[in-house]
Length: 332
Image 1 (cartoon, rainbow, N blue to C red):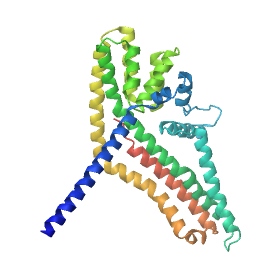
Image 2 (image 1 turned 135 degrees about the horizontal axis):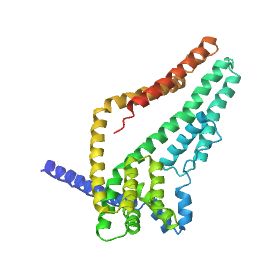
Image 3 (image 1 turned 90 degrees about the vertical axis):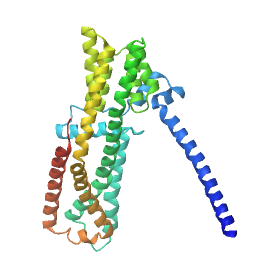
């Protein structure tokens, strides 16, 4: 009898905890879904910001290419600005690059100060070693992290765009004009594409051409689906025709292309994962080994052969990294 009573009490306690847990999780999920359903632009409008202020906030990280800079500096800088913009960072590109520069300088200077009074001499090899570590910690690892976030947001835009296109087509068939259908996307779609269409809608309201605003959006995200959408709108405006039917066919093509792309990614997943491991593992092993046993490098950093070998190693790693990125960059 005592065993049955104890078992009943334990079951009651388990049921109570399970029920309370379900209520808490359901409440958290519902709140999270409600938060995600409102894009950033609508949140800014609710806070009372004007349209011109919202455009400035949403476009503060837009990359700008400085033609006065040499190509080997201007192109990587432009790519970095674009990565920061696509990552959706609340900080501007200048602020992030300043933080990365400060972290790199700190990681470089602090070990030099600590080595100043130690038994190790500060030679060109030691400075080169610490500079490589500082660049890895202050630049490469943050840039890889920003690239991961930017790629994740780009994939989400690619997944959202067919849904947005279906909503646009439904609005056109219901009798809405193009401007009204576009405005519908700004309120119905989540971020990041909801705010992007909101930015296009605001630019059109201020006098920009719809196709030009959409073309800039396609260039920002480097999205072929949006480019095809722009071409469809341009052709229809010049030649006429049923725009809803054209966009419906385009939606089917985009979905078929996305299905093929997912199949290709599934078949090439092993190669892509191998490429990521081969790219990240040398940096992680280098930083980890120096953290655990810095004498492993410092004891030979004063040798001339170390300087030559280390520079050759960096060049070989850079070439290998570029070749791996080229091999796993699959276009469909």
